[in-house]
Amino acid sequence: MNSVPWFDLLVATVQRRALFRLILSRPLGSGTMQKVTVRPVQLQGELHFQWTARIGQQERHENLTTDEMLRRISQQFGTAWGDLHWFADDGDFTVRNKPKGQVVFKRKPPTQSPPPSDHNQSRRYIIPDGKPCSFLIAAGIMTSEGKVKPTAYHKFRQINRYLEFIADILPHLPTEGPLTVVDFGCGKSYLTFALHHFLTKTHHREVDIVGLDRKADVIAGCSETARKLDCRGLQFREGDIATFTPVGPVHLAVSLHACDTATDDALAAALRWQCDVILAVPCCQHELCQGWSGRLPGITAYGLFKDRFAAIATDALRARFLDCHGYRTQIVEFIETEHTPKNVLIRAVKRLGHDADHSGEQAAYDSLKRELGVATFHLERSYSDLLPLQTRVL
Image (cartoon, rainbow, N blue to C red):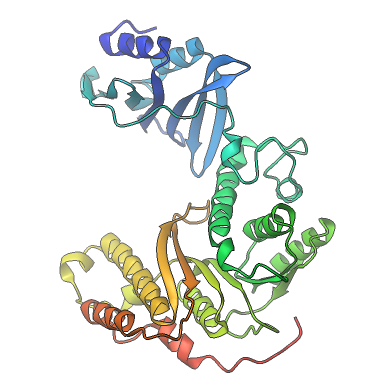
């Protein structure tokens, strides 16, 4: 192995068990790996290091001994990776491999604290790794023994992150009787099944959940899975957001990664239904971007910035619009899927006494529209144009 000052310091840090986290980044080759993250874990009372390689949106995990971990770093830094960062109790360290073999080493004051060293950190997850869960097994995320597959760990974390948000809003839903949920654009329904599991298995609630999607084959597959798993109170329907009408009150409306103005249609429907809680993860906001001809040229002259700023502006308008209609709205960070890097969650909780004066929220909304040069946008039109609710049997 290497015998250079920075590597000797790393070895000493590892030996005194002061390494919190290590990252290898800036790949030098033509492979698909994006970075490697290393953290200490305890396995049967012995110190090991979990080596996590990020490949696209997937992660692969290995547990290595101390010698194996150090040997890999010695072999791969400068050949497979150009940057090495590690965080310890005595500082943050960076080693960079420069052209012509030059190596630059920097040390900064410590910024991190020791992480939990349990192998799976399963106590952090609402659905734990290591305990069989029927819908995760059916989805191919977990083995029949309850072990999360390495290639599906990102999806596993996403599901648990989603359930953390559901746990947060649960106190704002009715405490008695069935909970009614509509999931717009449910797709393959990993998160719809997770929601059903959380409400029925963890909290023992009776539910009436409808997963709605335009694709007949997707709905057929989800319906068959729900039948096989005996998911009572869960059904899937082929249909469109703009025309779907529930048979009664809806307590929770969910719209995850509905593209462009489909998110606005889902929000408008939820507003008309006066849902207790609305959760939406927007995707691919094009409306404002297409209409900003010559507006804010210092930003919109650059295509990438124009797209990102339009997405931020669209979600800000959506949040303000919800505020104007009796909701307390927050914008929080979600977690991206393998299909989209969008990770903004709009979380709106209906205010008690929502018929009170909202002139302040309306003024803020109108001001934002003027600042952005927006006369109207799809959510406003969709909300105004919705037909009166029509009762039909689900």
